[in-house]
Image (tube, rainbow, N blue to C red; front, top):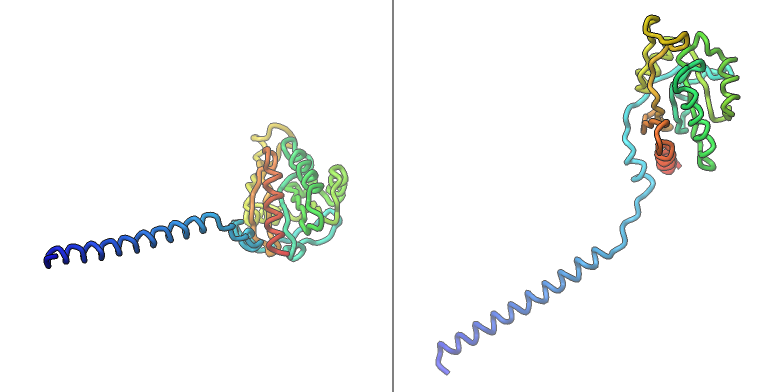
Length: 225
């Protein structure tokens, strides 16, 4: 065997050896990728679930009165998530349906939930404490967990617009279609957490909105507890 032929054989052996190593590495890579694909997904902690609910706004303060004549502030709901909307009892529009939806929501709250419901009247001149008590009874409100709030007109408008970010406009008399057509207001219900942060907003007259609200409440309370 001449020198040139020996060199070719040695080069072939080196190439074959390198190819074998590459094949082994490739097979190992495929096995690794498949094992990652079939590995069980990591469990998501309640805190991680809770963190997916955005913080839409942080409330500053509120000073109102409930249907029992008791003062209510942000500290009243400290450590408790709460749903809030704005209504008025002589509303000719959607208020009764909104309140009926909250009444249904009240029956669907999870066992052991600390959640509160809050309905703020935009019509303090008419909606006295006595009127709100009667309205609460009409919708079978549990007074332990459902507050109907009134207060000064200025505070109600401030809390509704600046704190809860809900549209509230008093109509001019010439714009009213009837005697009780007083306000143009949002039909949204907002979810506030136990430290006064808005975490969700729901058009509860729409199909599926109550389920969304309850799901978000469950996420929120899982993060709190």
